[in-house]
Length: 432
Image 1: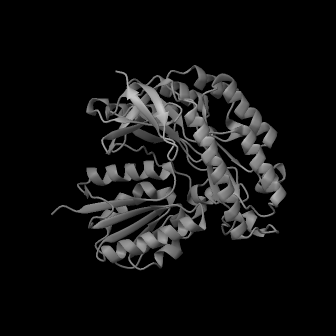
Image 2 (image 1 turned 30 degrees about the vertical axis):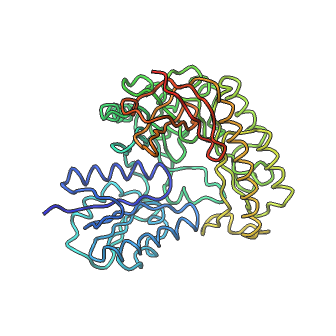
């Protein structure tokens, strides 16, 4: 009798790539993967803990799974499991809690269980975070997420990632090139290069991030690469120049800022100033004026005054990025930010988030509208809604066009005819 397994992923693209790797192990072991809403014998939950809201979502998900599948084995892994294993183990229905270091052993641990029982907790000590779990997503998307690096050495004041993921580490370039070949053989045309601190690649192998990018570019069958996120202090002139001249690496940069106020950046223990950040963005635009620039920002960090927030707002307005990823500050136990004075009330933080969201809508609309009347190349995905297919340009403008089956999974030349003001989707006409 076949055994059914469902997977439930919360959080970052790194988690999604790791869940895909786990799903392949279960498939190779004879399990049938079912949808998240279907009945399953085993439910695997890959958790996030970047905010208190993320923790709450994890707990609620686990409880829903147990109510829907009371006899199913529930295995929980990921960052929340790493940081608060006993808290998760105490939730009714949980059978296995596995830290990030041994995430690759999850299939074997689950297969060894004879049935439901008291939760077993494995490998959740921070000092054990030394292994690298190789992972890439595949099979269900036009693009794949390739994990090239894990962990972080930065220890920013608000962040638990160092404790949840350990020190920065990575596999050799040759291993990642082999994985890119596997992705290409599966028919996917785009790879997103992902990690916790992607630009820090090379800590454990003596290689450099630019070495990896050059090696990946040579992989036949992959037409596009994106760098998922890179710290501003690691976005070097060499990387910028390489991406500008590459036929495969897209003009798409996601660069965390967190605050546009130098005083707050200092409290956050970030490794750059606003002047350095602006200089890096200018360096990108000098070679790639069409680049999509996405920026992370936190509103309501302890000590952030209204004047500090206005400084951040005006800095972002001057930079005019294509998109803002906005987060209200969330206090995480065990981080230095817990001890900082002058806490900002949740209501004030929420109001600042709303102001930044309004700014983001304006900036994103301006970025997408600027492409109307031009031609570009779009990789169309399999989703069809209302007779339309959707895809993205190299610089991450979303485009919709009348559905054509033969265009799915291909990079097609498209004429951009207009923009929908509500969604900022561009309407396109496929030219070939």
